[in-house]
Amino acid sequence: MSISSETVAPAAMRQLRGLFASGVTVVTTVNDGRLRGVTVSAFSALSLDPPLVLICLANEAEARDLIADSGVFAVNVLSDDQEFLSERFAARAPLVSERFDGVPYGTASTGAPILPESIAWYDCRVETLHNGGDHTIIVGRVAALGRGDQARRPLLYYANRYARLRD
Image (tube, rainbow, N blue to C red; front, side):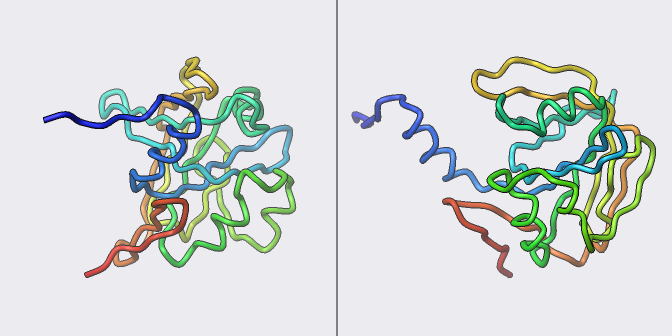
């Protein structure tokens, strides 16, 4: 049996990448006292011991430089009723402090903003940065973590749109 294939081009990669359902997070940081945040779907738990997570950010993304400079970030896992936060912090919008206007947040260990209504959060210190082509892989050592209401369902992203779990 022959399997058809496509040319490995950025457009094909982008299209097929969208066929992998992912959770939606807002990654936050604090830099010189200013709060910053960006919506990120490229997040993964990496290691239990030591506790490590990773995020991937485009090399030209403002958030990439801010996190590298500050050395801290928090990953906030969004619930399906927090789509508005995903949109608010989306990378296509400017990363300005006003994104936090009216958004409740707290801090844990690193000072990076934690969104308390998230279903889970990881407060991290930057461990390493790795080149990943047109992205940077940022590995964070988890300094603190927590969870919200476990009855809430995660917000998912699939085929370039939001998706929700069904019973």
